[in-house]
Each structure stands twice: as C-alpha cells, then as structure tokens.
Amino acid sequence: MPLSWDQDEYIRAYNFAADAHKDQKIKGRRDLPYIIHPGLVSMEVIAALQVERGLDGTLAVQCALLHDVIEDSHVSSEEIKDRFGEKVASGVQALSKNPHVDKPLRLADCLLRIKEQPREVWMVKLADRITNLQPPPRGWSRKKIDSYREEAKEILDALAPAGDFLARRLRDKIDNYGHPIAPRQPLGMMAQYVLYCVAAELSACRVTALIIYPNS
Image (cartoon, rainbow, N blue to C red; front, side, top):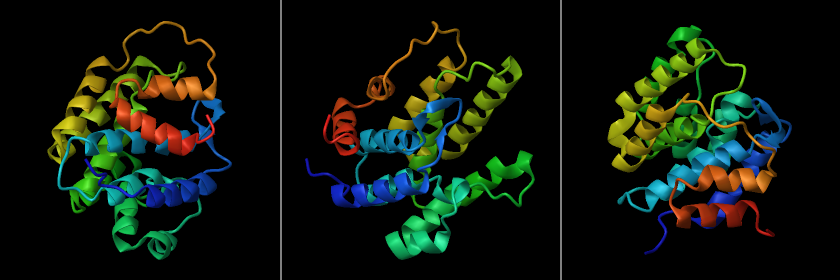
C-alpha cells in the first residue's frame, strides 16, 4: 500500500522542528532533547494513517512535527507559511495555545480553533495528548494528575470524530493514566524511544525510528 505522506517532506519538517527546539529538553527529563516529543507525536499519526483512509498524510505529519514550534520557540506562523504553506501554518497556529487568553480557558479556545481545521489537524491534537499521557512526573500531586486526565477527556470528547484509531488509543491512555507503576530504571535514549513505541503499529515505529536514527 503506498504511503499517504512524503518522506522527504517529513524529513524537511523534522529538521526544521529539531532546529527550533534545539536548546529545549523534555519537561522533567533534562537528559532528553525535546525533539523526541514531536517525533513521537508524528509516530502516533503515522500509525493512524496506516488504517485511516482518504487523508493528506503529509499535512498530518508536518503539523505533528511542527505543532509546538510557535508556542515553544521564536518561530512565527508567517515563517511556517513561507516554508511549508498555508495549510500547515494554519494547522500549527490552531494547535498553539493563545497566551492572550486566560489560562483556564486556553484549552477550550484551542479546541474551538482546531475544530475549524481539517481532520488531519484534529488527529495531531489527539496524538499529542496520547504522547503526553506517559507516567506523570514524580512531583505531581493526585489533584494535578486528575486535572490532566480531565483535560484529556475534554480533548477526546471534542475531537474523537477525527478517527477511531486515535480515539480508542487516547481512551485507553486515559483509563490507565496515573495508576501506580514500578520505579523507572535508567535507560538510553533509543531504548526509551522503543518503549514509547511498542503500543503503536510496528511498521510505523520502524519508519519513524529509521528517519530519526538513520545510523542505528
């Protein structure tokens, strides 16, 4: 089955995102570069594209890779438009929280803007929260964990029509979020990446890993 997304366009967006996030680390994991996060979000999207038909896969994976560059770096929507086109820029802008909106209302505002976008952008938001529902940071209180789970439910309720594959996966993540887990053992970066990937389509994981770690 031919791919619905272009590998060269994936690499172009990945390199752009890697440069935008080059000085950032994953929250709570100062040993891991932030680019791992959008890479994992794109992996979730790629897994969905394996089973969901009639989608612009290149739009989906580029928005996945770039979804945090406006919110978390100095990249502007205009720069994304110049590099990747209007549809990608509009999608990434919708996926970015508006700092001028009161903080308690930012998620609702973001979801409203996402729902004005194509289905591919909805998928990115689902994939983003799936990726973020890893074991909570050790310092989080039960109240914070419960609040984050409720946010995930709000995202699922709003965007589930994007596709059954990601909706089911997010629902499973929500159901299991915050349960007691065994102590985490130190792992190398690639080992951690593989562990994140095991629940997704194996073929999608392999494609993403080869792109991100071509010499592994």
